[in-house]
Each structure stands twice: as structure tokens, then as C-alpha cells.
Length: 179
Image 1 (cartoon, rainbow, N blue to C red):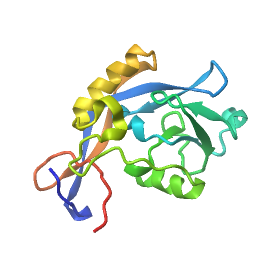
Image 2 (image 1 turned 90 degrees about the vertical axis):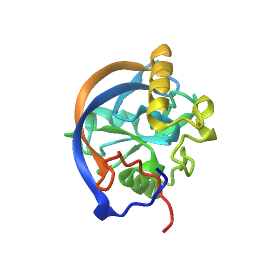
Image 3 (image 1 turned 180 degrees about the vertical axis):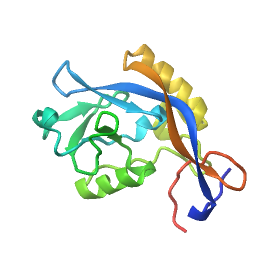
Image 4 (image 1 turned 60 degrees about the horizontal axis):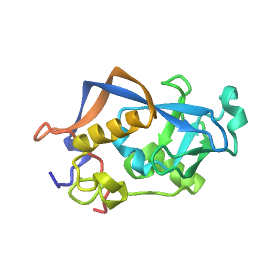
């Protein structure tokens, strides 16, 4: 559905989904960083990865880059306290167009921002072979692609919160717009 929704119309539900563990290879290295995500279809909008500033284990990665798993272009590794070291691996993929925390990182670190959805909520031309796909259909196709390329090394069941419309009980896909 192509509608604006106010914060008051949103409810949160806990659902069972999956965590997809995706390899982001370090630039000029055969080593990689593993990042877990519930939304692998948003990988086209990734413009950085972020680690907690206080994570000494990864301190050697300051001012380094990873290779984007699909585009094969280098994207920066940034460090910030906004990342919770106690949640997951303490590493996130930064997709500024779709997430408030990621948008904050985009502004703070002057990252690139990529809109991967059109006004109807379908993947756009930036997503190559998946343009005009609905989110969940694209997810299946992108997972299969990443599996074939050995970029996904694990998939685990995972319970997490998701935004639903109070009016029609549909999942809300965040597509920012001016009001």
C-alpha cells in the first residue's frame, strides 16, 4: 500500500524470522567481517559498516574498508558508540535511507545515501536484477544469490520486533518522504 502513516498508527509485534550472516570481505585481504541482518534485501543500500568505538578487538580496522558483497566496491568501516556492543555481534551494516540510527551515522560521517525503493515500495533500478520486485520476493532472490556466491554462511531463526499498521495489520516498510 502506498500511504503515509503517523507514529500513532504503528504497533509493534514480535515475529519469528531469520538472521542472515553475511560476509563482508576486508579490502585487500582474504579475511572478512560477519554481519547478521534480518533484511538482506536492503544490502543494495549499504554504504558503510559500523562497529562500537570501544570494541578493542576490532581496533585494527580503523580507517579500513570492506568490499560490498554485491557491488564489489569498497565501503568504509566506521566506529561509533551508537552501536550496542552487547547486542548481536556489535557490528551493523549501515543503510541510511531505511533506518534512523543509520541516517544519523550518514549525517555524522558524511556517508553516501542510496534510496533502493520507488514510491510504490518496490525495489528500484539501483537494485539491478531485482528492480520492481516486492521486498519479500526480492529477499528470497537475493538470499539465493548470496548463497551461490558463498556470502551467507549461516541462517538462524530469530525473534524480533517489527512495525505493523494498526489499521490493516500489514508490515510497515519505512520509506521516508516529505510531509
